[in-house]
Image (cartoon, rainbow, N blue to C red):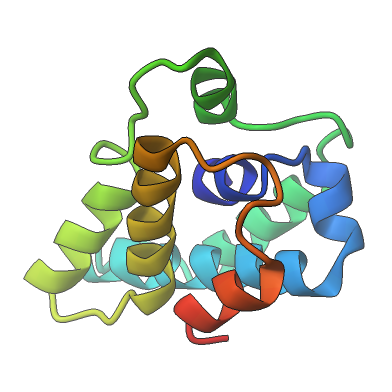
Length: 130
């Protein structure tokens, strides 16, 4: 959720309303759950569906605090959130191309001061392999 709300600079409602951003969110979650199962083999497969259901049930105006940090020009927790998923994926041999792209693009946007909408959705989806 953090990477997607930060990159799109949108709350969950508009993300869920748009097929492409909702698919991006789902792909990132699926990769995260695959990493979670590699790290913790006892993690139930149903945990991913429960997480997805929770995300889908959240209020429309919800977004990650990392988006607030981006808006305020504060340091982003990219290394601690999506960066950790990428590191653990590599360590455990789990491909995480979507999370890696989200982390890479978010870092570039923050570094270069890219404004909202500065990266077209098609370009973002292409970088994520979607």
